Length: 88
Image (cartoon, rainbow, N blue to C red; front, side):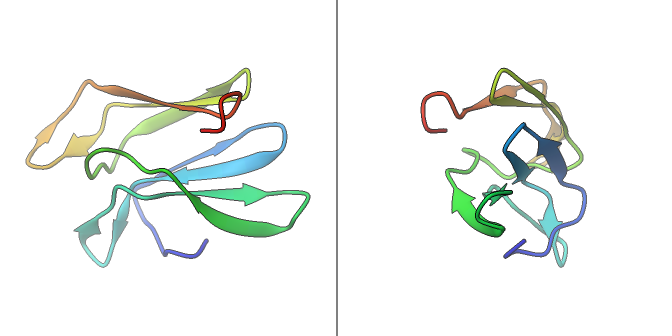
């Protein structure tokens, strides 16, 4: 990854890994990165609207769903979608 992260979600799709949110040196992140198996490289992708850590994620039909977690100063029940069928 290009940004060191803890407390982030890492989701595997059929062609990539997607790392979302987390913390870097106690700073909450909203960024996301994609590892392309074919290119053997990480690249940034559109991130979240807010910082998020300690959340969950899963893949389905070339989509990554991210839910819950700690956002700002409270827990959230929001769900975020990265739709790679539409270019994320």
